[in-house]
Image (cartoon, rainbow over all chains, first blue to last red; front, side, top):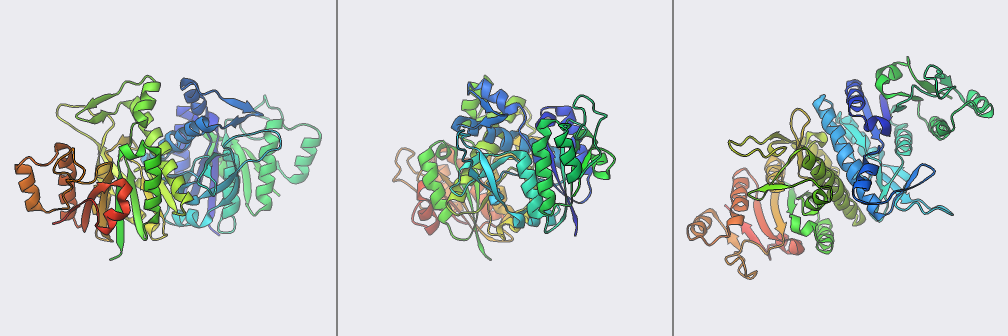
Length: 260
Length: 260
């Protein structure tokens, strides 16, 4: 099967124009088929503040009321998505930016939670692999914004890590998929304050030991759980590492590889 | 050749949630292939005001400085475009929303003017008919936002009427294209204050007479000039009329038909 990279770029890189620019140049240089999934960054929070729309966060998740949904739709699907697409075009990487509503590419449902009302937050149900394949086969790079849609046409704010994972899984029967989570850290660290303490490879038994010994930074656990779930669903390889070292992540010379 | 409708929806309808909603329901009901081009509306002006970004208009055209470009990108390609797409999905019309940067679907250059600096305003150079055709052939309805891109990846604010016209022209060798400008008026009026004074049909000689006798509302002249230019480039028919009567515009029972 042909190789496909599904690459998630995190919020902290998006907020940094220089880092984002150099990341996009590396991304554009990747040969072959690729999909970019971007997060939100602080621009939405900044805009909400300017507009006097109060933001409520619970466990690091944004509570998305109607006004906040308008803001994240503008910022994620408008500003960030189109600026990334335009930059990729300038690097001769023909990109197309989509929200989940476009071509129903990522369908979701409004999150139901026993105690917390997250508002217009979506949990992913299905990824339209047919549409993605048809674009990839035209050598078009897809750039996905973290906005999805439910069956009633309601837009929903959705976690970008989850979108990346679900997209990778949905395409794993059509391509040899490598899923890369690129962010500001060098990988999964043994010591969160030491960038040199990157764990090169984690398999399920090593993961269990690291968790039992509480050697893994808590914020990393959902990412790793997602990574193992992706591998079990047919994704070939998951890599976590620094956005500025994207080419070395791909060549296996940097970051953490999650393997089965 | 198969029929294709290229339909422009104007700003005043976009600002009116109820009118927009009923328009989109009619639009979704059109059988066969269709493209929707939307304008901007007042939301960008409102957001600019809230953010304290001063707006300068010259001859009804927005001067687009860097801050204004950020706003129109968010509003046109984010808010308006994604809300239209989501609404169409709810009507079982599978739509995909694109800016001109997406798949390089509408390439433009920054407007050069001897005396006025319009800022980041684009004049259209080329429409990517291949990409549009590939989406249409998958029974996907394309929704175009009035944002384009130049060859250096610079986003540009672009007139939606022009995008509609250039899109219709570019596809006229592949489809039997009808171009519809739908807005708040019933068509081209003999008396701008009388909605019943719609001129049913205008051909080039009638147009010349109407202009010579100054019987045509000045604001309509660029639209009509564009319409005749589109017909000369292979578009089959141009119709101007009321958004809420879209089905009757298509059946020929409402609005003004521009013919050669």
